[in-house]
Length: 351
Image (tube, rainbow, N blue to C red; front, side, top):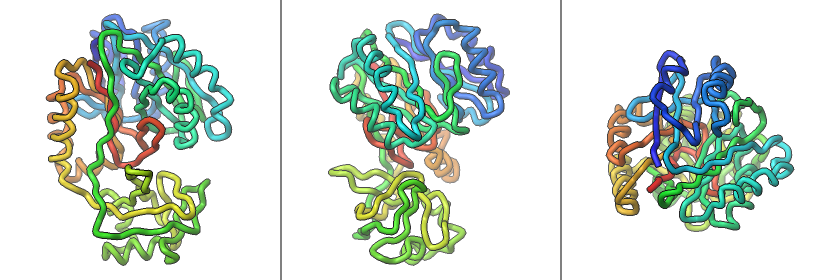
């Protein structure tokens, strides 16, 4: 298979798709002002070609912040595209669409991945999707877009998740998740006074969550939302730790980007040696795939902001380009199989 990345910093879709060839799947990354126009134009330019899209920044060796970017797969890819609607209420209502698409691509654990773009309620969406994928051990990589909109096959949807079942006809696929954080000292908390609907974390070990966070890190209230770049929380999930980013302060509580429930066990995380972690990820993928066709990744917005703040973003993209054709989305939350995580990178490598 082949992966093509095209972009236009000024939002010209025809410029972005010039040289795309004969695509078998297209992913669109647009800005909030032009999204609907780009979705319609893409369908006119490539009628009948499966496509999904969202509002968000994208990249290969450069970042497209406000324009438009496309990723196209060709030369040996089978793809089926659809949406699950009403994701804030009952995405399972549309599950038969996914079941049929899994059958249509005849996917297996070895050669197939599900790529999804979501408008929200990610944890519920992933549980729903993975209830189908797990029957064939098919991996999932994706993320949350901006503006509450996604697209599939030339139509714009709100309150939905757009997905593409992608089968590599010429080799294997494998999903990865990268975490650049580790536990800080022995801080361990029991969450309480949570609001699941609003992602509110009210108390840690019975004390106001905001105060606990400030006292440990010796920071002012106004610095909390940027300190989370270096010190997010971690939610223990078996042997794995799911990162929980802080969104904003709500009185004595903290509003987060993913759900925390009463009695959840949380730890405080701190930023590790991200340069070494990225190099290790590259080595791991190279070891697993001596012949790489493409890597598609989703990087968290907070990772992008952190890497930019640390003057590392360009170095990061150059490091990942060692793998060959690497491109992806900067999202508002990352998806890895049935897990919704923050401040992470998830990716899929194609042989």
